[in-house]
Length: 243
Image (tube, rainbow, N blue to C red; front, top):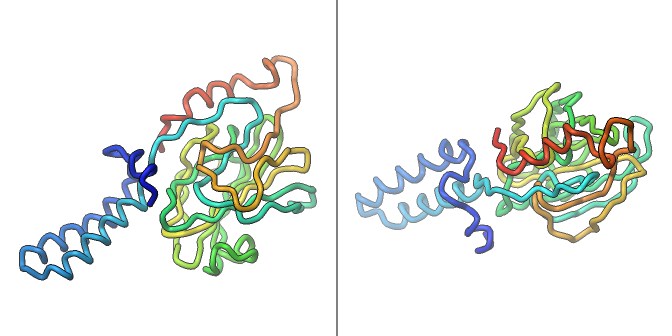
């Protein structure tokens, strides 16, 4: 894990699953160390350290500019392509999360989750193109002031569970925590063709902080500068909002 990321991991900046998975090897490693089985103890303690690192949950500064679509996760952009969704032309950005990346996922925009669908599937390597369709995943349909977009949590070769903390009908803020995928995975974002993609393949992005696309809402009477009051309020509270 990069040192810069380590410095952001202040006490308590870890999701609760980290304690469930990290404490057993930590305690067992301590017991084995007292029995002078040093090699086995070292392996268990290193495993505990890895688990605590994997489940870290650092705070992020959420962009506030109108129309910003932020990354749902940390990682590297592996696909930027034109793609239809439900017969509508659009563009998809796929991001690969390595085991050393933060795996807490965030909402790419402010809006209401109109649909959340769990799809069982395979566990292909998350970097493969087929993973977007064939792997186990949670698919979120998000209604925003600009229109409807879709984002996915996708399991990978090592990841064996996608976890959502939200459900259909929930209102989410841009950059708000919405779930996690365990131990290596992928996230996809689909936006309509009128959105302007701002990233390219190979770029590294941060969940909730990096802007993937610009997709401003159309000005409507009763809104200020094309930005709804709800979106403004959501952006102001997103940075520290935990699920």
